[in-house]
Length: 294
Length: 298
Image (tube, rainbow over all chains, first blue to last red; front, top):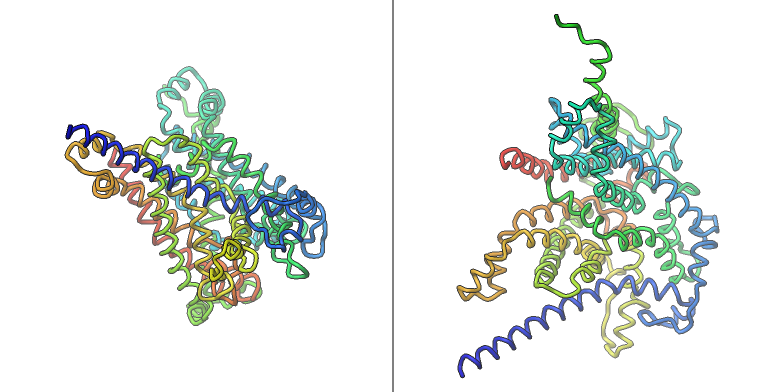
């Protein structure tokens, strides 16, 4: 009798506990979704409806007007061509920089783990510290150097800068991954007569596919989302999309077009959001790689 | 009889170092030489253009006498303290709740983490709209019947910094959660079972046994969040543009405007070096201990 009652109350306590857990998690999830929700619904409303004070509700009349405007006709400075050219700039900047930094990082990681030489650890330490460099400490000289190289204010200049500072991260990723591949594998290949490049392309690279994905996604997100380099080294027509977005939002003339602002923010966010939704698992691995030592 | 190694052999032996060297040179120049270069500018009289003379610590004196910089440093402390405390508390709470064999765990995790995939400019733009005093959250609350609800922090100099904290917490909680969750998954379940048999309740078990075991994860989170907060630049620009006035100036925004907008290159360089020193003070001991553990630990 007593045992029965205590098991019933234990069950009730468990139930309350579960309810608390799920309730808190769902509430927090709604809170975290709220800004995205607001961005999306605002971008689908007409400006009049926005000013009529509907903030969180669904649009009464669905319109893509704000998206069209943000993409093709919104004014950035004196140019009124929308975000499109800047979006293209961001693609032209991000894709080569991701490929270059990942390729070089893979090679570096391979060398630092499988062809160890004296000082390799020191080199790795110097690279590791560089991962956490506050870029403010280097933008002044970099601006000078880009000017001398004739790359100031160009997309090529941004590709160069992102590749240089991306190498440190990609090297870290690949080094930590290749460390877990047994040395016997490369030793055996060496005895069989395989050379430096052969081992890399035939053995290491095929084994490293997951980390290639992690590194590419990490670099893509970082470079696409960069603002500091974009705003420091470019102006006007060669800016990446983040800089253009900031300029659209900070237009002070006339009635503020909040729906266009939100559509523009969504356009800038879509590529990285898509990557995150499609390959979230790899994204999280990249995120935690910096924290969990290899 | 041994044959002297041919050029080919020697090249083959040096090949790894040769392939590595361009990256080394580039990183060495782009990071360490450039830091030295910035350091040099910071002890010169540079204003609009770099000038390579030597004026000692004059620019540092000027920097610390600038009220804007003092505001920036104060803000950095307020921001870092609040940002770390709230992000860690929320991240830990979510991680612990998610670790209770939850249905749809993957789905929920995706929701908490998606802000990390966004640019700070997007985050700032979104939150600026959410916190809009006439049309944003305040209006929603007023319409719901809570007439006295006021949320105009973003327009008030003494409160605007907290708006940046809110947006930054929103963006980074998922990151803290992911690291704590990885830490929790590494803890043996039998510890919890054993404590339960002893009669301890779950909250107590977590507070006095599990959370202390998460210390390595906590250290990583503290270090990486501090780094985010020292270099946070885009979020401040997008959300408040360092205003109202200069109320939400941060070291990063100060550095940028001094260097590129106000023709005070020397002062800007000095502020960049101060930021670098702050980061180094956090990271050098951290990386050193991590690498040392590596060597002894295995």
